[in-house]
Image (cartoon, rainbow, N blue to C red; front, side, top):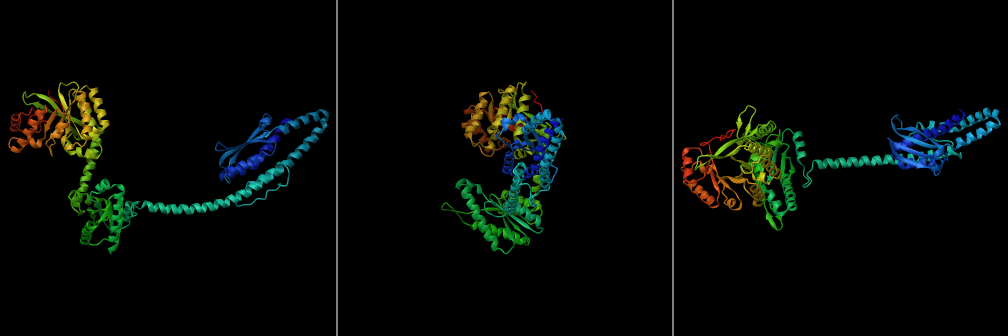
Length: 613
């Protein structure tokens, strides 16, 4: 029990050291003063009984110091820990660990054993003296700990005992020095916080300015316009778009185009400033600007202003690389402040579509209804794709010599929620705009190949040039024609009206497909413009003459001449010609008379969901 008492005394000394320095360590952690923590722990090691000090922050070791005698005395030592609490709080932010030497304890035990053997009766006296010593030793530490418990940087504490040449004196001096450093740092921190607050305010103002300013021209931007529209209930708006500005960028370069925009904004700003009306000039982005009338004029004056603006802009001269450049613009306007940006943009798009310099928004434009219609069809397309309601219908193609079915064209159909059959006329354009076109292509490829896997009949699917240049689509085609073993049956119909700008890439697709045994047709040949270069540069097998040439073939001499030319040219290149849209008996008779090998149309057979062989 006596040994236990001596050991507990040593532990108590170690714990009191921990409790004494814990508030300072906590404050240093709170203030992120890692160097001060290191300084304090090193000062503690000047006490020969303290072998090592470790400081943990949230279970992470942030400081560790060991005395020179650590390795030599590690076996005769013990470790004590204490939690570290956030200043003025019960929140635990770490722990403090002290490795304390057992040397004094061992020496005391040895001495005690000898004395016990010699003079047993002196034990009580020695124990009492030792108890008084311990009490006297711990009294200063308790006093210091009590003083530090309420410490804050704004409150100076005079820590006593710094004159003593022992561990209490070392701790007192260290705490007084640390206190001075904390006060100095606190003052610096206040100055830094004040500086940072000022800089944050400056940066906030700068960011707000950037948020509402176009970086190129320095004019208010789209967000600024939206804010103005929201703040004023009696405004009017003009949106100005520079026609064909892309050509300036393409020809002179991006930097030159930016210079034109800057110069244009300055000239536009001068024109606005010279006008007595209160108008805000906005750079919406790119080649698009806006004028917002905060107090709108009469409708007649508003329209007159827009027309004068067009005239003024057309007279502006810009200089690029010693070249004089003039600009043309399209302007859309709205006299209604509610949804002004959307309405002015609708008017602008309509003006461009109608090749007009200026157009004022009104409900008769009906563009909003078109937008709603597009959104509705996009919704229907997504629903149809998700619910497997996109399906091929098959229209037979007949040989005009044997009158037998030789192939079928796979035509896309949408089956709506009421089981109505919807033709692509209603949704194909929307599919391209809404990025759903490639999904439709994949569905048609897979279902068509699957349908004809076990049928003794050729079939064709339509592909756009974009499909042929899309590597993902090409890989999907290859996968399906191999999976269903239909390479020798499938014909890919390329739409002539799509245009081919890159013969080389399209030719690579055609050569790859033909290597597998597939065939190629040019669809709608003769629609819009006829390019016989297709026939010379692309290795195709079929030409499908467009319905615009076939529909009046029996009576229209010009159509007959064009068709005869196509047939003659195709035969010389060993290609098979197909007449599309054969809608009556007279047309079919004329088709045979002109020696067109194959026919397709409603007169012969309508598209159905199953092919009848």
